[in-house]
Image 1 (tube, rainbow, N blue to C red):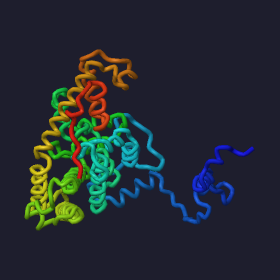
Image 2: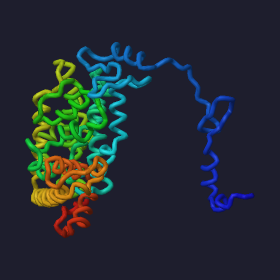
Image 3: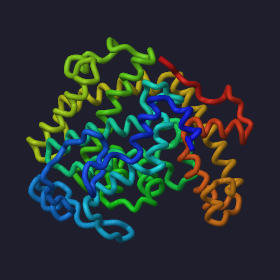
Image 4: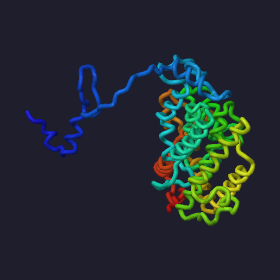
Length: 379
């Protein structure tokens, strides 16, 4: 009897459906393409082989992955991956990482071409791993720290830290929050968590050179791409850059990134420390100062931040008073309104929200006036 569903398939859909089980050219083998041909001579590359390769290839002082890694909860080693490769993979598959796609980098409700926290993390990882490879540092650890470094950020950009500060002893800082709260369930290695916790320059120095690399890569990436996004949004023009910046690293993101990355690599090779020569560091600082004045502290940005703070605090107050509306709290058996654990659960829940989910929740749960929400800025 003919499958009636098949009658409605297009020719393209029939071709795709025909590949469902792959192809079996010989017994014991299924391949992806009818004409698959690639072959090679396999070489054992299990955990022992990879660990031995690290010992030969990494620079003295680089961080080595050993066994299952130094974790809060002991685990068995993976058969193929080093401990830091496992950390990288866990972060990539974490919901907190995926939610970065809906969180502000500079602009709320980012347009398709504007950065989000997710694309920022990917660009930081690209810059950081490029530096790590050039210096023969541990690329997997570097990438894990870079991908996870902003997972503690709340919706609405850095204004979320100001919004959540009153509810956390010592204030809310996205860096330690990301390591100690958001990513804690992943049981990451101590070195990975330390790099995430301390990537901000206002924090103590990371315990590894890989963590130091991410600290520089984060600043290099956001200084360059935040300016490019602001140009695209019509907020600034390349001609407004300070003369020092134009002279030393140009007006294109490609040249700017190349200048700063080369400076870190060449300085590290010359001195044996992760840093930058004074002239290029002065250029990066001047670039960042310009961004602060022209982009982050402009009147529209301050108004946007004020709106973010108001709505996020209202959400925290709501969920602190009604903690059993938080899905994870219900799963754990519930909390009493207003108790310290309820407040922390509310902060954790609100901090994990994407921009759109937070603002939609304010409208649906609090009757928030949409006119009081942060306004998108488009190019």
